[in-house]
Length: 362
Image (cartoon, rainbow, N blue to C red; front, side, top):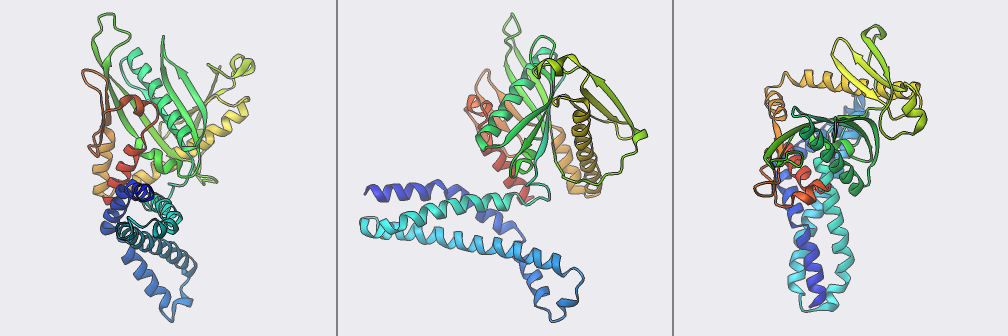
């Protein structure tokens, strides 16, 4: 039956998602948290609790997750059984079609809701790519990575603004900073933070030898109205002439800004805006975001589990091998792809989701 095959294919397409959701749910404490909060709200003395609004908000959030999980878990099993029961009866299958399509969308949405529960996951973010040691080779690799992230953002419907672009010597780029806007931009792209390694036959080597190149990626969430105390005396602000595309005015005036926060050593720069004032404003937003992230990392560093995670982030997270064979491997999850051309064209969501599942279990 053609209709049966169509509906069976829809159910099979989300089989991995439902398996991931069930595995996450089994290891999570969501039900225990909900029961605990629900018990607090049911207490006759709850109205006296000074934090009652926060607790009620948490109860609503957890209840939505529990209800959604129960609905899709039951729905998936039910429609699997009904499809097999009525596989030869198209009249019975027709009314199921819209419900099965709706269920598949709910499963995908639920998976993302479960994976993206961090305090800043829903936020926009700043993504920076920096070439490693190795001159032209690494600078070319940094440019390839930048294109990969731009293509990924295009696929996912994120809006991207290039805030800073430092061209390489001869080819590629030394560094680039992207401002990525869209729902869950930080939640997804935080999975890309770390060292990315490329192995290939160098297009810049006349002897066609194999080269290994490295580039580092950092991702920080944009936090609107962030309250960070910054003493102006702690800042060194340098201006310079912007390079690359941007129009005659941008390229011929010293509108680009570099801000150094002397106590922390954090440096940010912006050259995308037309005026020096606008670049400074954007640069200060980036600096505040970096300082907030640093504060959070210092607090979490007291947790030994977080220490281990930091060490893992410090090493290479993914290898892109183009010679002598073709493969991309994520060293955190062991997920592999034998289609590096597709990956470098922005097809990285499967790597991101795999990492987020691992992070959720940990």
